[in-house]
Image (tube, one colour):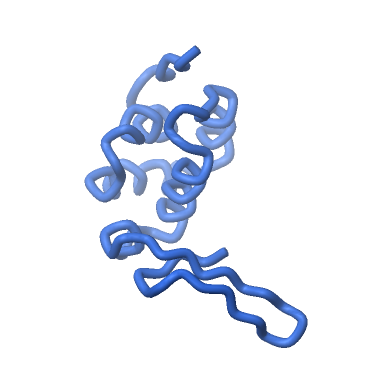
Length: 99
């Protein structure tokens, strides 16, 4: 799946099927590639299904440079992601789960 500010559609290229998913322009606007992937991952999991273990895994997996970039790209993310992104970046304690 690829995110685009164009129309959603499925394209076949030989044996490969590519799904293009419409997103508002501000969601596909220029962030760092890693920040864009983190935003897309959280968006696909959904606000109510974000688990602390996944967030902790991202914090351990991302490089210090990528974690610092998350903070710079924070204004481009939806407000519900901010506590999770700040935790991943290392500037906040873990957000509480919504159990």
